[in-house]
Amino acid sequence: MTLTTQVVSPAAIQDTLNKIWESLETTNVTRASLFNLIFYCKKNNRTAYVQKLAQKVIEKFPSRVIFIAVDTQSKEDFLKTEVSILSSSKGEFDVACDYIQIEASGPSQLRVPFVVLPHILPDLPIYLAWAEDPGLDDPLFNQLNTFASRLIFDSETTDNLARFCTTLMQNYETTHTDIADLNWARIENWRDLLSMVFYSEENLDRMQHAKQIAITFNAQESQFFCHTRIQAVYLQAWIACQLNWEFKSLRTQKESMLFAYQSKYSPIEVSLTPILNAKLPPGLILSLAITTLDGHTYSFSRDLEQIHRITLHSSDTQSCALPVTYIFQKAESGHSLVKEVTHRGTSKHFLKVLNLLKNRENLGIC
Image (cartoon, rainbow, N blue to C red; front, side, top):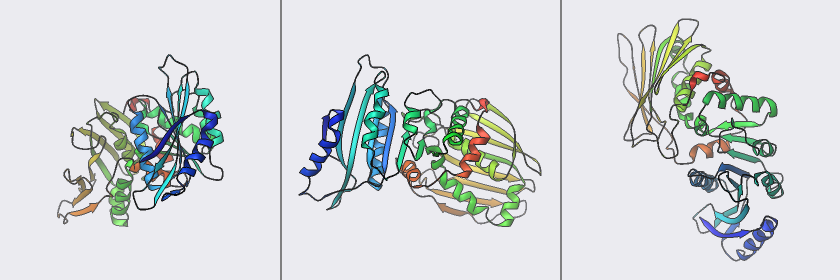
């Protein structure tokens, strides 16, 4: 909830914020900032969605938000700033934080870092949520990158997943700044579930002898999500990395993909199959089935009416175990960003996945 908004010149940002807070001294509003959160995006129809993500974060973790939107299509040269106080709670005593919005034209975007730097709160972490494709040349990326203690990307913004993975690996190896991706966060429940199911030596040994894995995902696009295969690609790559499978080949046909790996026991085929369902979130993984060399099958299926419920059917050639239902944490819009803000460091598992997928140009548009 926005308590107040004022358009100001860049030089007057801090003075205006101070005056707004002075006017709120007699109210039940408490000022708080756990970290600095910088958003960057191009000004287009996705800007409003990114702004909603910012609001979702501060509802959980009040922080100073600096929101940057660059209009590369504008014929006018401009740099505009405004300040707001955003409430992060709805209780009797509201917690609120600063929101600084910067809009610039293409020619003026190089002035943006000079506006941002004086308004970063010292001694607090700086998270940069880069809501554009980092693989494309952008004059602001390297400058804002130098501020950040953690970089959060969204692979939904790229039209080339191999290039995206290569760029993230290069950036991490060069700067050692922590990196994260929202699509990686979106499959955390699946990674946790598979780790739990295959934790025992017996089940892990069966998984090591897998010969076929079939994953289905929701390929229905939305206004803000059109690269629906990425979560499924990440999940199968994570499984391959954890089991030390050697990548052999990849074939694509429309939305379907077929990965071929080699384990120390046998070849493995992993298929990614699209399903269209307009009622479900784009890219959502709907099912995962694993077949082993000795005929054991693990079939995970999502309840399409209650999508946080996952049922496991396990069977072999002689018996069938009772179904087991697992409950995923209910996901809300912006939940993946909130999770990545709270995580520390860079996931070693994520780095392995990036290393597997980088430079594989036949991944194409996911």
